[in-house]
Image (cartoon, rainbow, N blue to C red):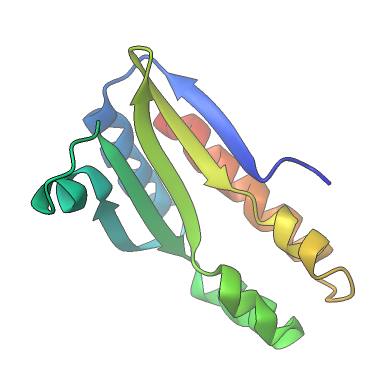
Length: 128
């Protein structure tokens, strides 16, 4: 089994990388559905942690095609990036779509998952 996540590291600031991911997702036909500021949410409950965001994105055409092949794909939707700081660097991790096709081996998702993953990695590379 391959790695669950694909990770890139940047010297850019947390905010710059987060903003770039949102902008580049939209410019590459993915809609930003939600941005979860985990740091803020935890601080509201009295827990302290460094910056962490989860950015959820979707391309409706790809989502429709995947769901038509196997409804269980819905358990893994939408696509997600996590952004956080570690050792004075900004880390971006993608929950890899190809893992879905490995978890649902007879779903016919291999080509679609590979295409989506390549597009998301491109967005990451543009953003860091």
